[in-house]
Length: 127
Image (cartoon, rainbow, N blue to C red; front, side):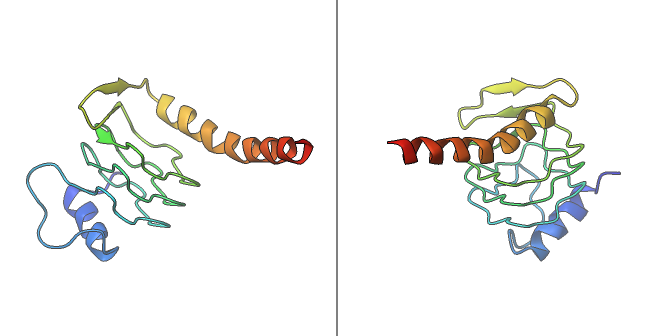
């Protein structure tokens, strides 16, 4: 079950990512430091997460539909059961996803990264 927007905002306050009352317009978490953050079941719809540090953050079962993730560091993030119908870039251009597609696509990238580094290191040893 998803948190409410108010519960999500309160969690972000506790994490030190934001302060003050919850804004009525789009939340700006540009460059927010959210490493290891527990954002499971959070509502982060239409949030600006560009350049956010999401290393090992738990966004399992969260809803990030409409979020901007440009240049966000998502290394090791947990996104099992994440809800994402679409994301947008800094210019407002959107990419749509079928149910489960975002999780499959971005989990695969995480699984491939260690393999990529291993292959790259082997290539560099040969050179």
